[in-house]
Image 1 (cartoon, rainbow, N blue to C red):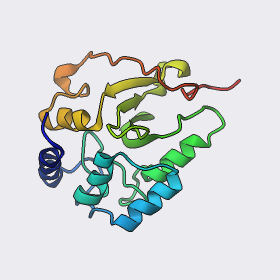
Image 2: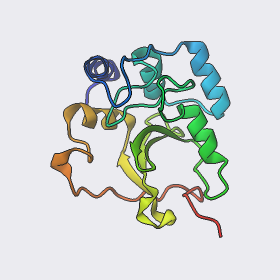
Image 3: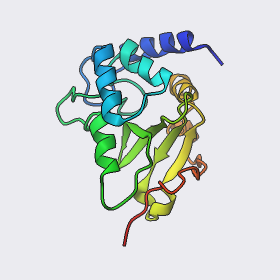
Length: 184
């Protein structure tokens, strides 16, 4: 596994070279004050690598599929809400319990999100996929860490790549009561 600086350099190069849907230019990185405001609003700190993506690479607009969402402020018209707004909105919905500390960072389309479990420094990446009809089983482990998730994107080996069609992700059972549940 490459070290964090090597990974950030590879991500920065890919971010400058690609533009996911709806992004004309790579947004500037956020400053330390914006990161602090976002973490205060969320009530927890971002894992170090996720914080570095936002403070050193750009405020969203790069990564798999539609790219990372902006952290605190909307950057392009018609985009998903920023990460902070999306998380707070999901946490306060009445029709399911969104797990505390699980931050939606990228929209896959069709109500699916890549989410980082911010309760650890490694930032396990989860897939929230509520379209199967069973809200008890809407969470899957995408990657054991944010670093490995980014590496899969850079190497073209993610589950979402055409060559990996049919890959089944394991269910995430560590929600401890926070798994999305439709309330009767």
